[in-house]
Image (cartoon, rainbow, N blue to C red; front, side):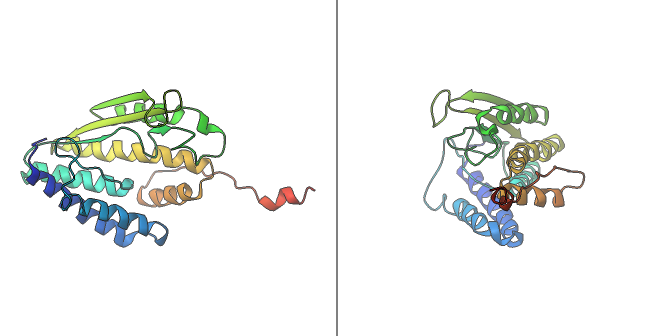
Length: 219
């Protein structure tokens, strides 16, 4: 929010440090994605890419997002970054969009045609510390084809901001991972297992996977 390019460069450096640490311990199945995300935040400054008023677009998993946001909060509190930072998301994310022709096209249990995930996402984000939330239609695939839930959160270096980061980003990501895991998406099942390992007390049920050979034996 300082609109100072120097602060933007500092956030890039903090994000790179966190993502390098995350990539170093990531399982092989997602290490390539993590390295792509890392390159994505290493390159914008070199190529003079600024979105809006001193902003960046960055993809990361729940662990990466939370650690990056907490690093920003610490940097604001110490004065290393001069002003609050706004974290935001409109759609294009694991929990924020119900769109059977795009974001939820990998959900195969029939629930991809409902809008419950985006609605639950917005309500959960609001209760867990988002500064504002939005529930909107359209967005890339056309009016009536998608429901999006988005948020904005101002972080200002305070203990409240740290709590909101940890609680809200956790929900914002894992709501959608759980939904896809219940729908038998193998990547989501692996991701939610890793999150449960990182989060004592988190318990997400798993679907029962039918043996495909059973149906063959009926005929």
